[in-house]
Image 1 (tube, one colour):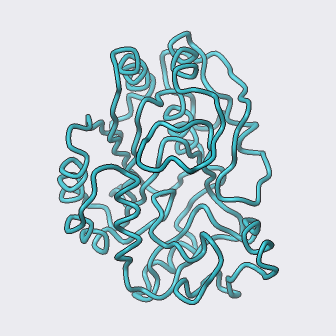
Image 2 (spheres, rainbow, N blue to C red):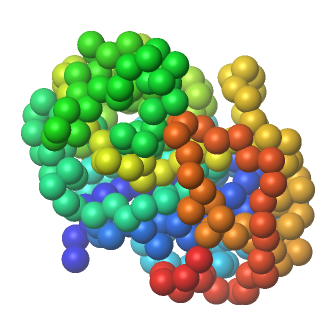
Image 3 (cartoon, rainbow, N blue to C red):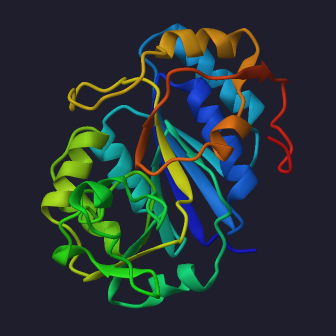
Length: 275
């Protein structure tokens, strides 16, 4: 079956979190997909963590790209993508609910629709409540993002799980950026012109603000479970339990995580029907 969705994941020093994201993708993405991981390890210990993820996830639809020059690496990768749709993800996300080529997904085929936001839904209403309004979706789960004043809902170029038409995002190559955060900022300054966004009734993904490994944006709040602690856990044979995170209720785009549950992992990828 031909690949329909390219999932591009950005990762730095987060082997344990990347493993959790990959397992959640196996569990919930029901569209034929390929995964491209652009990763960077700050030292040999973190590199060993990534080697463990590579060994645990030997699927032939997962491709690893060592980050040497982020812009050049991504630009070159985008030039090779054949799938009609592309989604960017970061390694502190998980996929909570099933993603299939259903009637919501098919709305992306409209030239008026910029993308599908997997992190938004009728349940992600914290920012709307602050303004005393409802989330802006109509009965078809569409909204005009340019006319929206609600934080997150007026930000269509997020790297946290927005599915784009691959042909539309080739314009990224013309932007100036150095790392994922400056890429998202550059994309937001020059967003695609399509007037509509679409999402599901309930958010399909969640960003877990467990720690911060980048230095481009330092104002974002996050938990204090360090990447070193998680890498040590991973190298000691422990993986993050997905189930508590998947069933966790949330109404915000980012959730600060103060504690995690761990379980033993083995030298093979978990089965698709397990957590």
